[in-house]
Image (cartoon, rainbow, N blue to C red; front, side):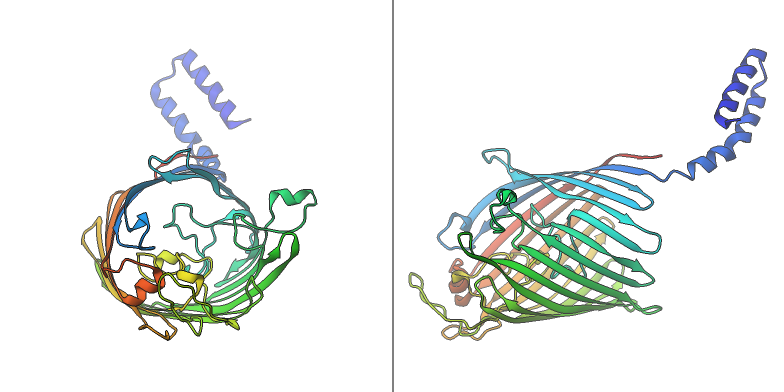
Length: 449
């Protein structure tokens, strides 16, 4: 007999016969194991989360020098509704996002930040399709760049294997404009992604019994070249490199190297590279230190003409490294002068970034962090010094509860004449930027069945 029906019948009979309460207790105890076995088979999980972020900034000094951004104050908001579902062999996620500046006309920007389904087998094979926020290794080359309000995501098919210390991923993307689906051609421009096609392979291995992990990354990116009515075609550029981390006890050592080659959108050959090294030491749970160095190659024959004039330099090769789809705010200084905004005239003299810093937790819920950056170009300039400036970043974060936190920071940079000319920055040599972020991320609903 069905145990639930059996239990119902028993309670009805007991009520009619006025059976003592202790008999009811015995009956509940007798059927408890059956209920427990049923609950253990609850394999479906549905969650609904909110992400509410309020972010304000104030700055004095910036670029370009004569624009209103030199002295501006504003507050931005980002709201996300995240719905997730899981069961054995299937996982889905829907992340609906709105972001905008307080007081702006219109309704801000609505978009789907993530929407994907992932099917997996017990042997470690999986396939994922949809809009995905990709993140690999230290996120220097591929990351969600979540500091930016819009964040980064990609429309992809991702397949691979994960198990026994091995991870192997294959990522495929093909982007198109809506008006082209009716036979209007294959030209792709002003879409959600800067590329037309992308093929990426990533392999990671964790060494057994050792705190060592290593990755190899290869990307083949098809950039739209030509014009819609005049020789539309793809120019393909490649990236090949690797990342390694070693974490013995209180230390974490990281290193990476990547090389770019192929052709740019204008057909010019690419020959660029970057290397990075970082060491972090955490002797106790409440404090630690870090230092590192980044080198990103730059274009040769980089001349900076005086303001108000134009300079023309013929480049036979593109030697300025482009970290493409990474979380740029994590590197190169918090003020985001590099690889978020471009240099004047669009050239790239590369970057040298030497930094040192540390963090300290005076309270369980409070974390303080400070970093110093020495910034310089990688290319020797013909008429000015290579040094760009010195930047100091200070940040504090207080966690009220597991889903409410407040962060604030202040950055100060003493820029040089080189910084002013390359970035059209304020010429007083004192660039200041302050910000705060209030993050509220409650889980409003969860159920299993």
